[in-house]
Image 1 (cartoon, rainbow, N blue to C red):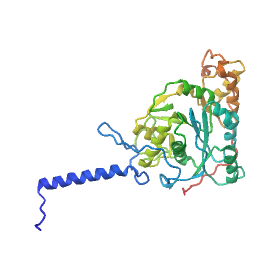
Image 2 (image 1 turned 90 degrees about the vertical axis):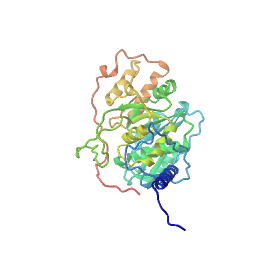
Image 3 (image 1 turned 45 degrees about the vertical axis):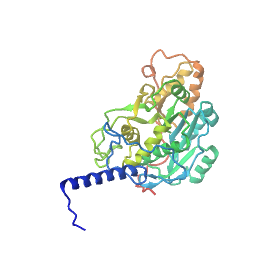
Length: 376
């Protein structure tokens, strides 16, 4: 055979073929979510010139899927959603030891009361060292009794909240595709459950939505002494994309599936609401719908709402912090039931203009322990 010669045109053709083959291999590899990871936090998978369709399908409970650097598995799991007309599934990020807050939420709205509102609720937990307050055997008893505990194989830590958040979205993807909405909330947040159910049932929300308290023009904090200190290595951009507060937001099971799958293409970032509702949502071009008018950052306003029900005054706040009062979710929602079926009149002025309440500081039990945890 004669010697191979590479003319300019022939070499150009070979180069084009090689490039095309590489592109095909990359596109096909999108279907293996356990292998691909992005080294850039804000990689755009969709732009004006091309569109990559990712395989957004419900996940199998039997399929092992990595959650960033861990082969994820459920330690405790809840029963799948079964109601065909489910309005929303509520996923609550809860700490292993927060038995009182979970109890407060269950007493305010037991399983049957939630079903009457066409709602389902589950609590998202990680692993933690056993203590005098909580042991794994006790958590297993709690799970057996209420059937609403989802526990993943990662340690409870503030910087591990993104694992927990995505575990909740994964679980919804696997078990609650028939729900119309997904409500994500924290367990130290008080929510007027009846009003929220009515709001999402009566309001025509965009299909591609994420509704909550929108945070804009937020910048990474570079001060090492700050709780939210972020290094340039963790996030090298000068500003966060718009995101909604992780306290409480509403989305859909379809978007939950997309967000979880998309996380396989981005490196880990520990501020979970920035990462999930900002970075990932931006790449999916998800619209943010503002519910800020229903939020307060002051637990005292919730106390004023409770007092107001005694005068048949309605509450214009749906979401706020419990201020360390683990029972406030129960007392607030019990008071709000007085105003059910429009039995209370609208306030003449917003509560933030009329509320006078005592500032209460609730000290939680236990001592502060700072430790470095390694994931399994």
